[in-house]
Image 1 (cartoon, rainbow over the protein chains, first blue to last red):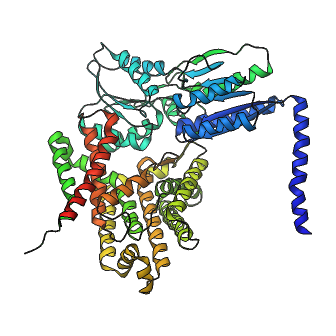
Image 2 (image 1 turned 120 degrees about the horizontal axis):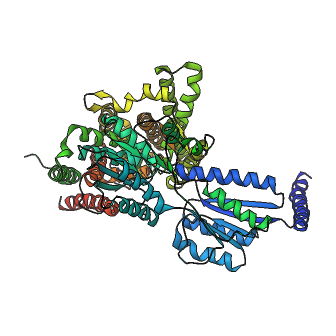
Image 3 (image 1 turned 180 degrees about the vertical axis):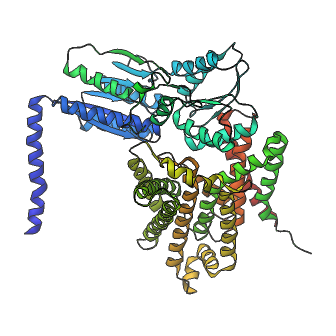
Length: 319
Length: 321
């Protein structure tokens, strides 16, 4: 008796779901898939937060929009996510931040060939012309703005050490732009090592820099997570007075210290995790408005100074 | 004539060679401040690796320790931030936080051990599962960002990592004490002998009236406790924990154990060898940062080569024996 009841329940649920599905089809619900890397470090944590926040807001504002968010820890998982979205969720549009360019190119191309609207965020695909909309931060400007700040504000002969990210083309673009901005100036880059956008690794590398070089005037930690590790290593060595630290991406703790005018942290360079919001919003606009949204949208990197820091401070974001 | 046990010398020779290489390449290598940094950094992996030596010696494995450390660090920080409102910003709160880390570590180790011994699931599978669980939990607790200790508590807690007796800081002292105790337990206690017996042949051990499941369970609890202890030393360093804390620590700990001469298939454990293994790994990192010998892209490759070489050195010595 009991068993029969239990068997009936899923059938009833399926019937309800079918009816609901039929009702939704009448309203012409648009489904947008969002595929992003999982929150494994500060920047991606912020990006995940902004993605979820934007989706919640848009779903409330447009009842006809439905979002499918998936986060992946590696390119393989991300490819599966996208295949699932196409096969089972019947998406009309896809917003994707490729974990890596090469492996994601073909799967995203398949989505495009199926006639869907494709938005690519931040890291480009290996092949040109697949996506309808490209939204990205400006990695070249990210490195250049920091380099120019050092070129214009450090004393002649100043010595700089650099903490790079994870070895990627994106990291290369930033570092090359940084070097180009300093080229021909009287500032010297002493050393460059990979801190992997990780505060523990950055702490270790900075400790070693401090042991190796008796004179360091400035540190470019190309990410605020690394800047935290760097600041801690400098504090341990008691050399806070000697050098300035410039991070990047605008972590809220760092921005608030810039607001307070901390002499050790004069400026920061933006690379907003909220760029995912721009991408999702513009993709949604394609379906709910007549505004043209195809093309390339590059969010430039700004210098955060004590004067303008307040507008880059997001206390609710985890980053 | 005293017979020289050649195969135990492999890792020691590698360590001495590295030490000389480091000193030749950059004089800053031998400065007390640098040695202190390297030793203190080694302490986290070192404490975990001592525990891992027992687990591997009994024929088990634990892949979850890096994630477990991140999770414990997150929980400890949240507990201290929460308690500060009740008990105030003082050493009492920090001691409670330390208690949370140790109790949490023991509990996490117990869960791993119980699933392996009571539910009889392969250690590799259980800890692969809990590795994912702990990592997700800390990311979830931190809302994808970073959990930070309140600044008042941090300034009280900070000396636990940075302070000490002269340049010999507390992490170094703790690591040394744990290593000596670990070696003693492995060599001179019944527990240590049982661990080795189970690792070399668990059926014979069972027939010899050794409570195999209990000893196995205890090695995981011991490892969990040591992960908790490592967390206690880790939290004051950066005062934060995130999803990227402790990534790949499990592999570093396992590598250190194997470099040190403990057999991956169990039965022979050498805690002092593990200490040497840990020092080798962190010294390579340090030397590569202090010199510009190779492209930083190749750091991982150099480390890999030295790991394999250290083990090859051991194998050859053993064959010659």
